[in-house]
Image (cartoon, rainbow, N blue to C red):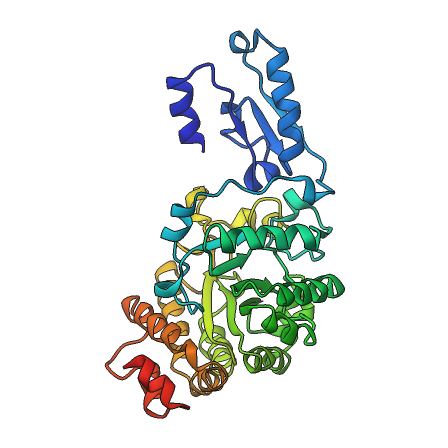
Length: 405
């Protein structure tokens, strides 16, 4: 954004530049914010009206640059906000990878929807509260259903991503939404993120309403370490697997979000405790990122003096660990990540879990085949006989073999 601001300022010196988002909400006085006329902390819909009125009233604005930091109040009535401007060709060109149903090759259009803002939790590594606060605010179900109907019928979307931070936080609201969505018969699949504390009674309702995938933030193998992350409610392996089995029984794919790169980790911990945990985790997809303390979080206060880099482009959770670990080097962490992914996908637990899911939803086979190809491309699984082929050979139905062939 700073690079863009410099370019725009040079070519369009009278332009009004506004910065917003997680970064400036956490660090409004950080280097680079001086490039902008306005820096917005928090949600932007209400404050943009204030800025426009001020700019319109200042005819001399272009002759007198200003730099203001503005903090907005939360938007309490989300239904009043307009829907995003969407262009059909852009959504039909985008494909959502991973183990998805419909699979990328069968996705006509993928659309992201936000049903709520905020989160009732305060995870030590999450910066969402810098914008949304710590209170959940939901849209009305009628408003949500209208937008879903629009994107499925007008944009021909057959895959939706609900980008709420924790779907299911309000169980009564969630149950009613799923019931109404089931009644509409939109025939669309959707993917959401939820906490491992998701009410088990909601899972069948979500499946009936079109949910085909849930992403859970498990984060670490040691349930005692969940306390450090303000996630003690995640529970142990048995608790997690009960939730994941319930999802698979309903035909829902389970994705796990997991982190490594903590300053307290040792090679022995990753080799012994983490590997054993992943070998016994009854999930269908695993994403491993590097622990990254974002500005504005509790972990930033705790670890900002132990950073390996101050270059923000490396704070993407993917490129490298950013906190110093005296026991494990950066190249070793990359090796460990690949090794842990291989451990998960080559385990007997993963094979049995996949069999169980395909037994409920044999038409997910094409999703598994495409997913296995992406894992081979990334060097996660190797060899001619992958677990997908084993599933076909030993598989649960003739339909699976036919689809793969």
